[in-house]
Image 1: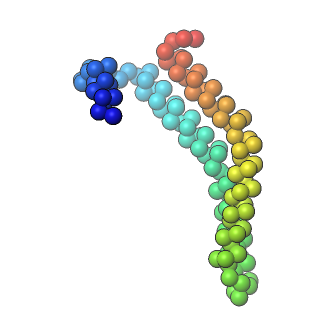
Image 2 (image 1 turned 90 degrees about the horizontal axis):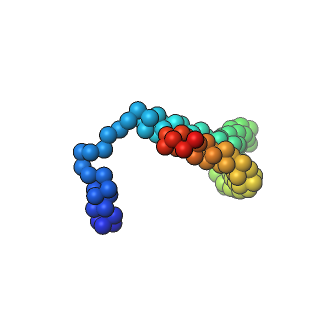
Image 3 (image 1 turned 30 degrees about the horizontal axis):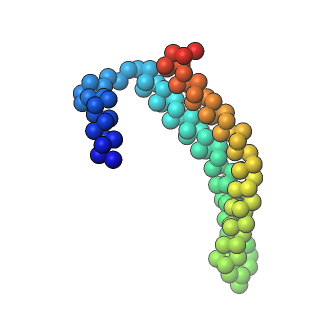
Length: 113
């Protein structure tokens, strides 16, 4: 690790790296793309678990003798497993769009296109 750190200082000496506007634009666009990707991947799971939590909340108010903690755990695990399987099936399409977009942004910065 120390050798890699020393090599990085040889590749880019201290106080010689200049940040250009195009680099900042690239980094901000890549961060925005990664945030969009994270939201697209996590949103179905979050919404489904939120709806299940709300449904169990209503159920616990109507049937207080039912122990919701033990029932809810199994329901949340089942919903999580089903949605994870569904998302793995659709993961390739979503990832390919964002990876292709990221490579296009990097190629525009470098000037290959």
